[in-house]
Amino acid sequence: MAQVYWNDVSEGQELPALDEEMSSQRLVVWAAASGDFYQIHFDDDFAKGNNLPDIIVHGALKGMLVGRLIDEWIGDEGRIVQWGVSYRGMDPARQNIRVWGKVTKKYEQGGEGLVDLEVGCAQPNGTETTPGTATVMLPKR
Amino acid sequence: MVTELPDLTDEMKAAVGTSGPATTYEVTTLGIRTFARAVGYGNAIYFDEDEAKKKGHPALVAPPGYLGMPVFNPLRQQARGPRATFETPFKRNLNGGTEVEPVAPVYAGDVLEAVTTLSNLALTKGRMGQMLIQTSETVYTRQSDGKIVAKTRGTGISY
Image (tube, rainbow over all chains, first blue to last red; front, side):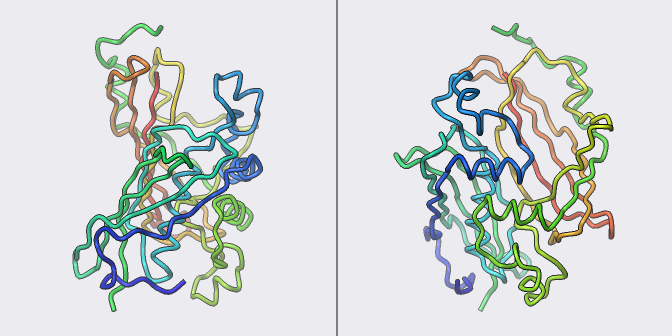
């Protein structure tokens, strides 16, 4: 993907969103990657026994998907200053998650071009479950 | 129904500001690839060492937020973090949120020491009754050069 420059970004601009399939297989790969082996994420009977409609997506996976959205947007020359999300709602597995971001502020600090973002994860019906914010440095032309 | 606490207990107040013992995290090529695969990365620097080197990196690059895995050893007793030093009537826990502040690049082969400090405890009322909100910060330092590579902040909700 072409490098994004600070000069070309405008407030209100949307980042290219990710539409991610949350299959049971993917949650198992995440369990291995993260070491989070809590059964509500991969064992149907266990999840139902905990009054859940289905196995649910790990919160941390959603947080890291937001990290990927930002990493792919800022390119090789950008840098993540920080990002964070709140886990406000559960996402059942076996449906897609839309990972999105939007530029809320563009400014300079210490000569660097910085951008604040609003980020989140949404269910197919539009329910937002994982709102957050981020700050990134983008190179200048 | 859990008995409500009128205030934080003395034990809880004493735990705020304390840090747990250092935990060792290993960043391996296998760990990086598994993480990058689960998150769905397509960037070769997270999978292919030669591609990472072509871009000026010394080894396979850890994607943002990947800080390795704690060393698992069933023969050694698990270290207890600062959150484990007080009694709480709340039995259930939720992950409330995560913040990541990457400070320096992390590479395959790095060994990190993570120290978690309990930043704050607060009692609030929510839909599920009284809740204990725990915020903590973990600082990750690379063993080989003593550099801080990342800080993460977490919110835990007990109810």
